[in-house]
Image (cartoon, rainbow, N blue to C red; front, side, top):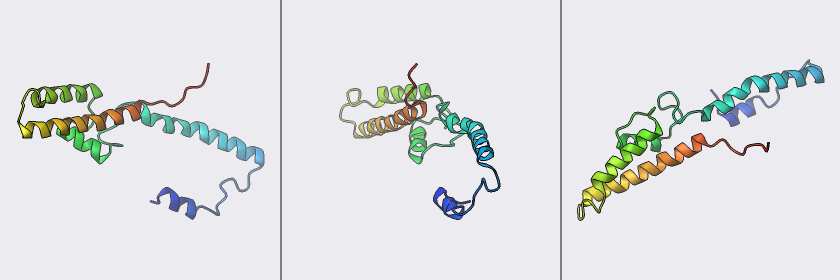
Length: 129
């Protein structure tokens, strides 16, 4: 399997539309773009995909900190963060260095997952109606 750069280099001299008229080549390209369009938009349909597919290592570590599964809903992340914050907040446990470290780790983990949620749910600029 090639990465995108090596695949482009490997296929540089190959003409996919060789032997087709300009009209047939344009029709085939349009048809293939229509058929493939679903694949490019489907990756942002849900917060989580199957299992941990598409999750970064940072996201997986953040989910582990909250003891959540990779396919959990973002509301579960929010609830887990609130529960951890109520237990370990420096105002609740003043002077407890271990609790403060857990609180800050939870804060960082929640931020990572919040940014990932925004990135997955962002639809991009919408056309004017």
